Length: 159
Image (cartoon, rainbow, N blue to C red; front, top):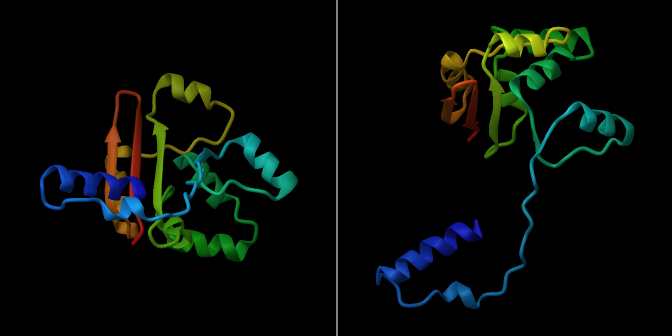
């Protein structure tokens, strides 16, 4: 946030809209942004062992679906399934995010190599072409889905 404001104020000074950056004289404690980490099998094992989790964890769509499928009680699973009209829906994810949070991720698109790599594990394919509409239907704003040759990435904000 400070960097964004600094850029804006300095641009206003260069354009001649203001003469000086008065905020440069203010003393403010520097905050450290939490660093996002990918929620891997190793980090999950560490979390189960220590009960310490990363402040910001990045999940792939497959990891998110694995989480949703691992709901322990039948009642909880039923509630999640009632909210999830089709596999991979983002509705339950939207519910647990706090306002202002961004749901973002990336995944590979289906290919022979991708399917071979996931031969003996749970693989949940996400259709990148319909993902944007599904995220918007779930309530996300500022939805972006970018598709590359062998992968795609997405994001959506919760207001």
